[in-house]
Length: 420
Image 1 (spheres, rainbow, N blue to C red):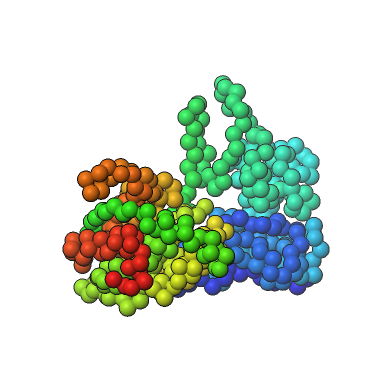
Image 2: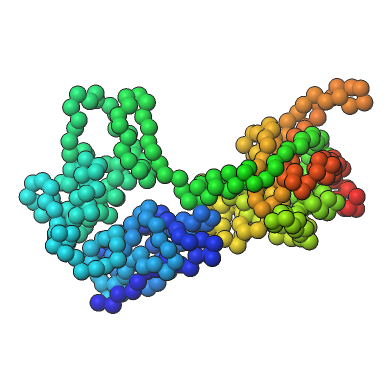
């Protein structure tokens, strides 16, 4: 038997540990080299762990939801094994010589071969009040392993071993994944406690850090989007034919932001102790919603990008965020951010600065509104802009004039061509 170890990939220097998500293979199943076995979540990205060799998965050293570190062994593959034969038992700890008190299987009910559970599985069954006879065992001689119980819980198809007396009959409900503990019966007011993902916990930490360390102030303005909308309508077909991507609003917002940052460099700066760091480059973070939560990939050197470059990169970021494929490098850094709540219909908001940046632009839904122009009430497509900034280094003058510069660039896009 030739055993190959599956290890956690190298994490970045700023990431000490990661969380196992969900194994895609079970013990005893065959795997091929480079096949994805599991995803590991850090506070920034999801990493895929491929099989280092072909063979049979014979041991899971770490289970779903556990915390792991760089280069830690999480599974073992037998390169000479045969599918369906698992010579090693699923365990939640590195392989050691088992003692009689921890390795002996536990018979929970009945006397059949399938009514025997390994210790970890027995505890999990007891904690969840489940019948061992209802779980198909994949261990030696049909023994039920911890992985079998976890799989059964995930399918929400395992009958309870005991029914609480006096409980009214209710329709079965689907169990949510990663439930920390079973909630008490609350009649028609159920609750379930689910732990934060690493990304959500990291976002919460950074938002609290931003509000506790920055003197955040927000300034607002309104912009008439008719010139941008007219330009898009005029050139959309030719642009799509030439570049293979549609031109959206975000590329205009990015261009307008860079235009303003050049005029007022402090908006593109950051605080480092008692120093102000003025960045000679323009890396714009674009807030993107994903199934895992908010992520902010970076448009590097946005001042050197064309409208087509920006639209293609944003589309790429959106797809990667959806698939959980954004890399650490793509979300590191940034000198200014843009958050587009208008995608979800937001009218107005006060965005929170993404540290260590000092300003962020919030854009919203463009709606037809009644406006007074030259003494006449006319209907115009209006978007409300909101810029939050760190008042420690950015005065109201620079913030207001910077937002006005963005407004003027959007209401007269030709300014972007002449940099005025």
